[in-house]
Length: 556
Image (cartoon, rainbow, N blue to C red):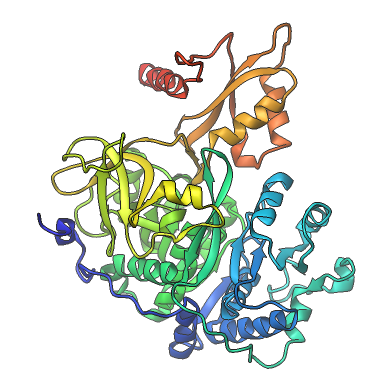
């Protein structure tokens, strides 16, 4: 059998095999600072920071954190939205051989406590608006150093915050004052190896709370290299001085971390940092920026942009060169809109455990609508039977996607049981069910797991079910994703009330909103007298999903 037959379909300049440097990921920043020192690395509300300034500041912060006792192997939680401080802290932590723990700033107290209990960080770098949440958290977990910044601190012309102005509790540190008080950019020299953990990135699970995927320096270096090579045939036509990456995806998410942060540093592109997506503000940013060389996005972002009132006058084909979507299926009508605008487009697939992309359509070459594409450079992919997971299935037969690549995680943090379930002889068993055609293109047909993907966010129904079960009037509940033209999927809950009780959908939604991050809250509630069950009494989520799909087809 021909090894990796799909490589003949790669774009020009994308190699058939992946070679990547055996260095820690922060070396990419050192190279960029050396080769393009005066090129802006960050554009944050119009305020610029060059690659040299970024590296020098990250080294000073590393020295300051070392003085606070942070060293190799320590975990440091980054509890920040997209801002320069996130990037400075990220590289500072890695310089010390410490481990970044990415934390979604939208986590509820229970979610945040789970991450802290799991990783036991020595420090957290957070922001002013989250101070009350962090103060409450410290009452329930082991103590750690807290460093606080204000999001406006790196915007030129805006007064910077101070420790006094933020009224920091005793023992807390102010980010800018810690940075300014650091010695020259000479942190301790620490031997960081390729297989050392770089980041703990939390992903969901069907068994309840999220799991911490351990991503090594080799995972990051190989993934960043593979993603950069995937667009090389197109990006090479754009001079380095004009290269920009639209960083609206959250950097605490693996998609944003590889396809925004690492892609920009690897290719010498300027990151246009957007802390929070607001469509009108975003279109204003597009007006200000001459062009975007690379724009990684989820389908909901692409939909909002191409359908905005200003889309025509902005001439999006002049603004956006490469558009790459993931995090959920792209509707055919939206793909056609993007292509009609003249934008180069690629849809792909990845997961936290693969350090972002693992499968994608070529930017220039053959694309197949409805397909997630072909294996990325460096990856081997097979579809295995759903029962044992040991036998490869024939072309056209549904099977579970299994992937082996240098960017597959090393395992889950302190969770050998879950690691053994998903990593078998180097193959990551993903839980996604797909079919493969004669050309090697892969089409997702179902998910072995019941994960919902709404607006690019992974949502795990079991977590929502557990919240619904806490409601005093609820007897049974099942959550699933139903098709949604904007979010891809949206969350719907089927609820059976206790005998004699009554409740409204608004009441149930409000209850969930108090206990779940916003994107996880059910948008639809359907009350039922009973729910479908198997012979042993197990609630049949698939039966409800099939009902919803049938309704969609009838209404089409």
